[in-house]
Image (cartoon, rainbow, N blue to C red; front, top):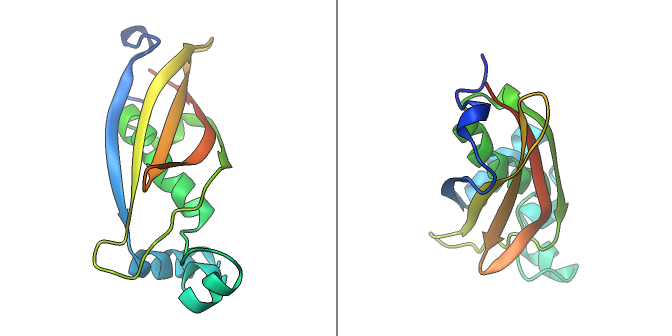
Length: 142
């Protein structure tokens, strides 16, 4: 499968459809099972507070994975992402209530590169704070 977006159809500044991803404590437990990361800061409120966190926090790799979904959904093929990196700037705090937390992701094409590739810059926010910095993906388009 290849990207469904054509390189010629994309301009620098093109905005990708924004997405909001809900995160609950149940989501974190499911992710822990899938990833094998059972660090108690991701599920034990008492432990998280004892180590100085405001509450349980989402796994960094989970946050990163949710954010890139904006790009893979837009491109039409997860395999079109040839490079992806972030800096973790703030944790996604997940309270133990029905609402949990939200990760709000926006993205735009920041540069057109050679070989049908574009660089997409992402912004991921939660509770009004940027949770990923220097979040960039390189995507090979059709």
